[in-house]
Length: 206
Image (cartoon, rainbow, N blue to C red; front, side, top):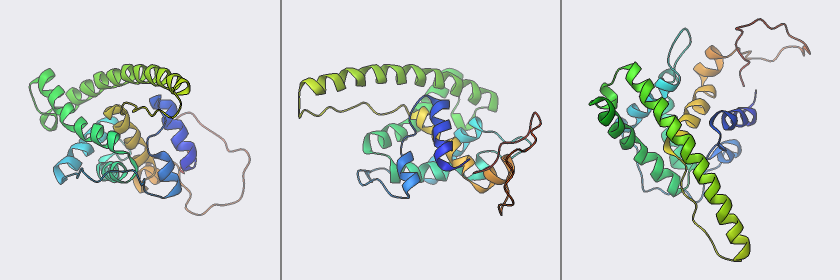
């Protein structure tokens, strides 16, 4: 599995094109990215816990082992456009507010079970938002065809969709994710067209 294939699979999993994926593939920064936001160590710790809820540590490493919070901050800063950057950053406080409203406790103090339930609810919200966004953008594109040279501002992506995408992408492109959660061969050996597969075997690393 290469990065392009991983990005395609993430898009299928989350129901949305991977935001900033083209810049990761090309190794370039988005020239339209804004530098008005700055992630603090506390923000990165928060993102680590969100990521760990999505990919928890079991008999293989979890998202925190792969420093996914730091990866998220880098991707958002370098690859996202300003509207998505702002939506993502605001999402940190939105998750905290939702946790306080639902459980009467901050996300960082919530139990793993509470965090899991909260993010499950948030993902349902994100899927509804994504469908509404797609419908609205379809209407705007049709309107743009009728009104030539008129530009339309599209709504930002949902913060949870972006967080989940970056969690999966950051984890499976990290050393712990690629070498311990997946099967990994450091130096390619001979070509084997058919390799036996047993139920429960790990996928191959990128």
